[in-house]
Image 1 (cartoon, one colour):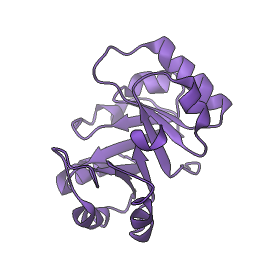
Image 2: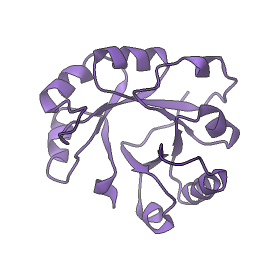
Image 3: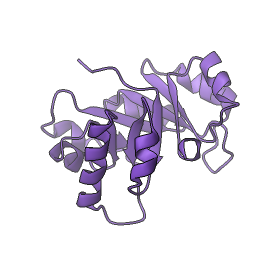
Image 4: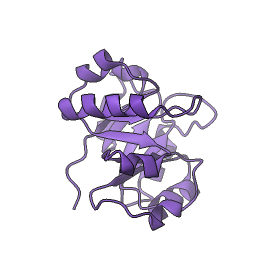
Length: 174
């Protein structure tokens, strides 16, 4: 079925070869909603990831991710459609999704996401969930759950203790 998925996920907004090469046993998720998608940039990231044996996912562009032969696609919490289920995809194509509450977790289950990112665990922003509620949400699905938001070296031990599958972030990996 699926190959083993990493337990660390690094969100990037632009191509930074030095920072990507530093990563070990980490998946890269390209997520940039501010500018138009640059296919050449995606291909460059894909090639660097392949060379360094890293998984590479594209956010919210499922057809392009499949066409470019990426490992899969990341479906953000605001994407609630199911069109991608009718696409002709490779068998090993993986969907990742993010959620902030039970309703969104149910949607990600229906969207056939293999992993669900729950955010924000530690970072107090508009979609702050917190550690206690995220642990409750983690038990509302049978999928593997990734913690997202405000991850530091100090609070990784808490995530391991609560048995999250892994963690994701931006600043942690820089």
